[in-house]
Image (cartoon, rainbow, N blue to C red):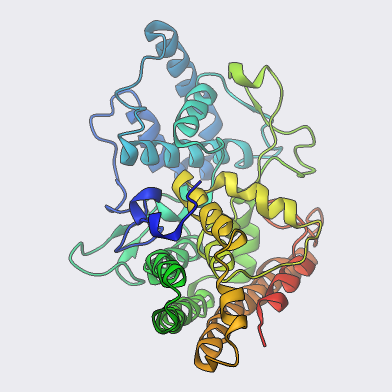
Length: 408
């Protein structure tokens, strides 16, 4: 673990100076020279049609048998494809397996309780290379799931499209793309956090104040994008058509024992329970909470917030943990600011403005959770109103986190 702010660099965490937590370079839209996995990629490209026709499970079963036969024939020597150095290919593979796996489970009633051998083995091995669980996560759903319509223009709504979806609805695509735009607007937050810790290490009040003020800008831009969610994503359509594919196998009454990944030796024949895709798997807010040393009350929700980090890309997870470690071990920006409240009131005001901007973003998010999930859940049987996409109680907890972000 890095023990000094002066050792922080973006490269330590595979973060981008231009795009922050988003993929850089832009994600692959097709696998290169991928004859082994090309049938799966073609199946993923047909996913909306396969789900509409009810043929996805049949065709994925056929592909799983082919993959199992190939694995036995080659003893699964796939370093050419599953190399950690070939990160863009790994991310593309993970996206394909994540979408097909989720569609296999949730695309028909009742949900599937077993992922077929062959497919399960490769899904597990790809996820293992990326150090994340074999389930759809925010990285596949958002961070690696976009392309620019005009490559010469910015990453923003109007010039981005999704690489993969389940049903192909406008609402589904817009929901993803709003998150991509938010991530891009947050692009220089990681570098700003690093520069704030440089300033803190040097006890440079002026530089720290400058970066705190600058940090409010991306937060305000993120909020403006978030306001656009209802333009093309209806809450009823989101709840009934988009959200069902984001469920996980943990704390889910439809999968009481979890999900069996058939043939995965490391799971010893036991069903696994993983969280569903959630915006909580984005590193933006956790990084800011750690950097600003926002001290949230420990509740029953806290273990979930810690657990969900395992679903972040490894570099993002390490960034959050490193900033958190520094804040708790002699480099607290909060303590530094409070100690200088009288001598440097403008620094104090800059810190408070930054927390206010984060509060405003969290407040809008809380409003949407109530509108898109909580209110909708009351209209449908079998959807407990206290449970979010990742299988956790959320409304009371989100309000607590929001309220504790304010600073006076």
